[in-house]
Image (cartoon, rainbow, N blue to C red; front, side, top):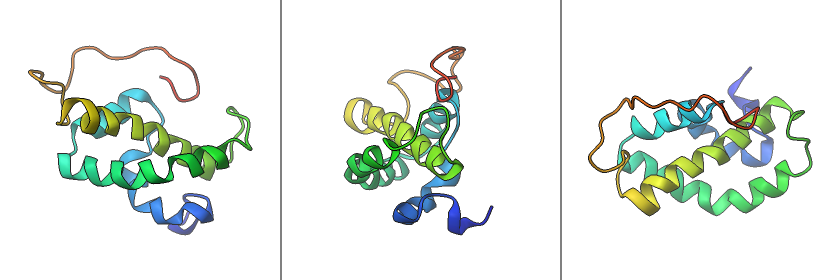
Length: 116
C-alpha cells in the first residue's frame, strides 16, 4: 500500500501520524503513548482534537466490523487520540505518575475489532 492511500483522501494531512499512532489494539496504543515524548503527544493531540468531529462524521457511514482499510486506520487514529488525551488532559506526562513502563498489567479483552 502506498503512502497516498493510507487514509481517506480528505484526511491525507494526518498520514504523518499513522506509523506511530494507528495501532490495532488498546495495548499498542498505550505503548505508543508511553514511548512518546510529551511534545509528540501534544502535537498529535492538537491536530487530531480539531479533526475529531469530522473523523466521526466520516466513519459513521461504515459498519464497525466492515470498514475499508483506510477508514479503519482513521478509526485507529481517533482511538489513539483517547490515549493522547489521557497524557495531555489528565496526567501532564506520557506515563501515569509514579509508574514505570512497560506495565505489568495488560488488557486481554475488550470490544473487537479495536478493543484487544
